[in-house]
Structures are given as C-alpha cells and as structure tokens.
Length: 343
Image (cartoon, rainbow, N blue to C red; front, side):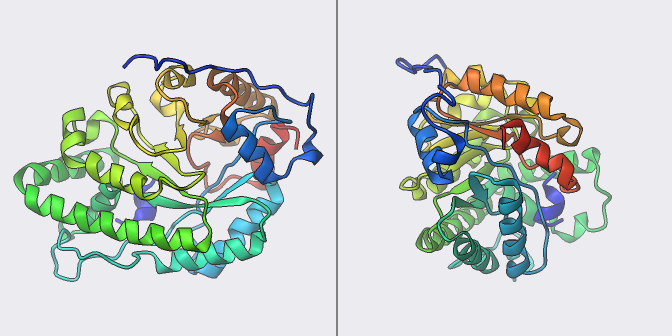
C-alpha cells in the first residue's frame, strides 16, 4: 500500500485570548495574502482570518502537481498554499522494509513541484511543503511487504497491520530505530532543500497520536524523539504546521516542546474543542471546519464553524478544515469556503 492509499496538563499561564477585530481598521483589498498571515501570526487586527484548504491531486508528474496547486490558489484565493506530496518514499532495495539508508531527498519530484509553485506564485503568497512523520512513512513501507499484497482495504485489515507493526517495534527495537533514524535523517535532508527553494515551512503530519497505534508510552518510546527532530529542523520557519492527523486527549501534552509555529487538528474526528487545545498551546491554531462532511456544508454552516473556532482560538487563528477535503469536491463545493469568508 502506498502513501496515497494509506491516507484516508494544565492551562499555561498568561495565554491571553485577545478577541480579533475585523473590518474596522483594514479592508480586504488593503491586505496582501502575506500581510494577512503575518498579522494573524502576531495576533493583530484583521479584515478577516487568513485561510487555507487543499486536497490531493495524485498527478504523475511534478509539473502537473504544481500546475494544479497554482490553479487552485488562483481559483479560491487562498492565503497559504500547502503543496501536497503525493510521491512515494523509496522502498528498501534489500527485500527487508526496514533496511534503509539516509537519502539526500526521498522526494526529488516534490522539490521540483515546490520550485514550480514558487516561480508561479511570484511572491503572491507563502507556500509550504507537506511532510509525513517518520511513523507514517515506516507504516507505509511496512505495508508494502508481500504478506499484505492484494488485501482489500478495510478497518479490520488496517487494525491487523497496525498491530503487526506494533509487534515488530517490540520484538525488533534495533531494526525499528534503525529504520526511523534513516527516515528522519532523509526527511531532514529534504527539509534543507525545501528551505533553500523558499518554502516557509511544512505541514508535518503526526499520524499516531491515538491509542489504536499504541499507548502514550509507546509514542514516547518509538516515535516522539524522531518527530521532535523533524520540528527542530524546521524551527527557523514561519509557517510550519503541527498537523495531528489522529488525536486523542491523553496525547495532547506530548507536543508542547515541539518547534511548531502553528497547530492543526480535526475537531470533527477528535471531538476536542479548540478551546481545550488553546488552554495548552499559545501559537496560532488552524482548523475548525468539518473536512469529513465538507461537500455537504452550506456557506452559512462553514461561516458558523470557522467563526466558532476563531472565537475559541482568539486572535491567532487560521481558518481551515481539520485536514484535506475530499478529492472529489466540485468547484462549487470548494468555492463555498472562500465565500463563507466574504471572498
């Protein structure tokens, strides 16, 4: 199974929830995409929240991927361009999924996409890469083994694969840590290239902050040190996003020392309100819009959702779904989100 098929504590002192002011001191036409994002990062007055959203294109070449991202940005006037990475991490050449070596970049095609998006934007908006955490990359490589070939995609099959990987971690800790070390170093090498291209960071997807992947202690032992190193490599970027793809409450405090300028997660799938996350984290929060039923939402419903999220997050807020929206969303369905923001 490749990446494309796989995707589917106390309050910190002094976290002031300043209420943002809209439309009084600035107008939509007076702020550029970058100015609007910068003001949100600082918690300053805004004409409206900056917003971003995205879905997978799954195109065969870097050129087509870049073209689709640029057309999406121009069609929907997004404030941040998140460049999806639908290219696969190279598999081991030894026949054993975990025997990996550090690579200069595991995603050379993605680097080309980023260069083309940069050139096409011509400074119009910030753009960021998409990076999958080392656990998720290891899971995809693990699933590529022959014993999993041809299995129909189902929750039961996925649960068995997750359990098998957990067993592997416990029974082969040296092999697990060797694989995660190679993946992490390869990802850090890739990050260096993306920063040289001009990306303002990356959305880093943490996939296993949920009990079905293991306990909090398992996360701390098998994954957390590698995730933190990825964020340390991105610590000098403006718009790196800690994307908690799955999230349960016991894991919430695990990321407080991560160098993540922005946090994003799904209110819909986690059941955790943004007000609860705000008690633990002071940085901007992105999310609030339902990505699962996105295609069914009206303009008014989207406006209600992001307005509630903004009220709970305070001034440091970016309007966004909790994750990518359905790939089959029609232009009309996609256009409802910017319309809900008055665009």
